[in-house]
Length: 108
Image (cartoon, rainbow, N blue to C red; front, side, top):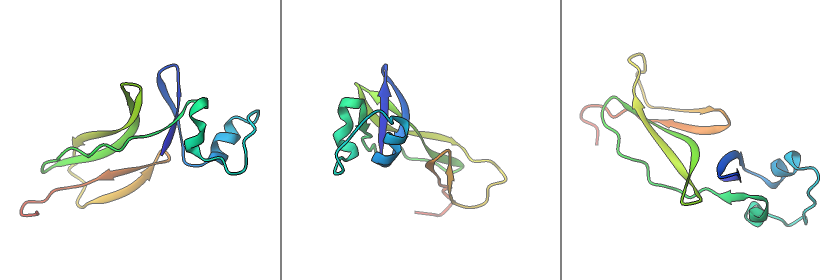
C-alpha cells in the first residue's frame, strides 16, 4: 500500500497509479510509472509493522497508517471484543482491510 503525504500528514491511500492520476489530472506520467516512482509527489510506501499480541476478548484492527520519523507505517489498534460477536471475522470497511481476531480459551 502507498499513501499520499502532505504537510506531514497521511492524506489518502493509493493502490494504483490510475487512482493517483484521477486525483491529479494535471500530472502526466510515462505508461510504465509505478507508485514507487511517485515519491516526488509525496506518495510513499507504507512500511509493514508486526501486529501486537491480542488477548482473549480483544480485537485487532488495521487503521490509517501513521508517520513515524517521516515514514508511513501500519497502525494496529487493539480494542475490546463486543459481546455479540461470536467468531473470527474479516471484513472490508472504509476501503481498507480490517482484521479482527478472537482468541478462544484453549486455542493456540
